[in-house]
Length: 105
Image: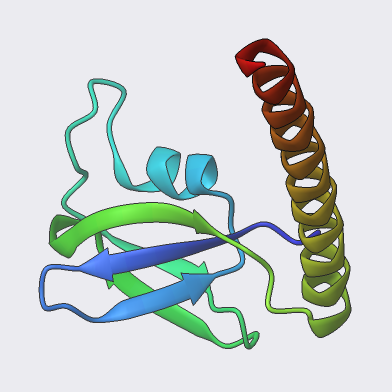
């Protein structure tokens, strides 16, 4: 899966870039964690390039790939896990109810 990062600026504008959050952070900060007052070149998700002034970056966060096949595959896995969890919870609830009914008599 391609790792993408959403950069949010203080103006509220957001950009999805083809860089990991760690890479973005290292590019825009000094070793002490303070922002570099420089303009940095990033490759956007669509392949175009953009310069962003690090001073105006509000947040950096990891986002999922927008690749349709990868997103569908991830969603199917999550749905299967959810179904399995629901089935296990229903089974446990029925067993608990049966135990309670047996103890109430």
